[in-house]
Length: 327
Ligand code: SAM
Ligand code: SF4
Image (tube, rainbow, N blue to C red; front, side, top):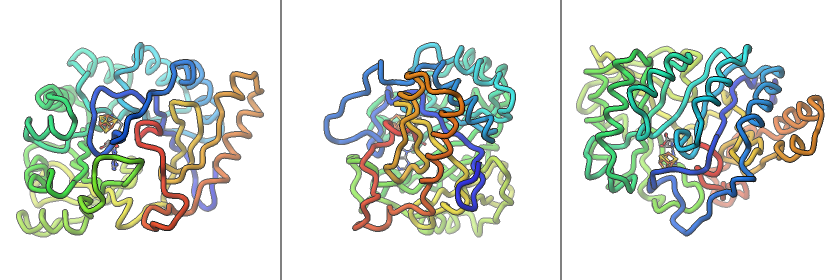
């Protein structure tokens, strides 16, 4: 599938808007309601839409949420998803808190070899303050177990916030000395109405300077197909990689190969633009495969050439929060 001069081969599927964590930067500060069950796309509906998207050129899928592992029967869904022939890459983004050794073994058996974990701090108390849950140990165990079981790469996403975890940038980066992890520092995106203030946002240049002042100049690492938007670097003699995800300081819209399917069954061509196209209701109203494919293609015609997050006067500033879209 083509959008402008970009080839779209990556579908990011949010299977739920629910989460067992309450991360400050993600969950809205004001009261919110979760989506009614009947309005959430059923697994068979997600599979149908994915198959049609594959026929149009999607080859890679990432499962996200909310927290994917809070949804019931996720493993039987993942089994069917991994069996879709034209998909050559299925990966998951998770907070890791609900994974066990047995579940990670199952993921590996299904062919899911790449996991992204969210971990913003190595301090259990701070972890509880950021996520609202006392689950550091559980998450850390999932990360280490995934590494032991051959999940590769294990990627760790850390949203850096001033006055919250900026004092741990060096410690997080140092994990790459001992483990072949990809530690990815993400710039906070002001979505919805999270409890984070814009002044707490920390941009990549400053994060990189902190790492270089401790470990010396980082060397740049060649991009591969599975890197997504992360710009990769290495500390000398490190096993792992340091990645920077820079939606604010340097948007990567020109290279964006993604389409999103929200848990409400809408297609969203850009995380940072509120345009969405409903595909679930046409599917429920017996639209033909050709009609559904036309809906997918027409959503892509609305993929913006760049996002308006830096422009405070822009009408495209997202009002949706991350869990309702899928991060
Ligand atoms: N629950 C899973 C998790 O935490 O990995 C998957 C969903 S979460 C929304 C996906 C990613 O979005 C996480 O790595 C999280 O750190 C990131 N994220 C959430 N809110 C963000 C924000 N406002 N700015 C930047 N990244 C954010
Ligand atoms: Fe949940 Fe992930 Fe959002 Fe944290 S970042 S609240 S774990 S969806």
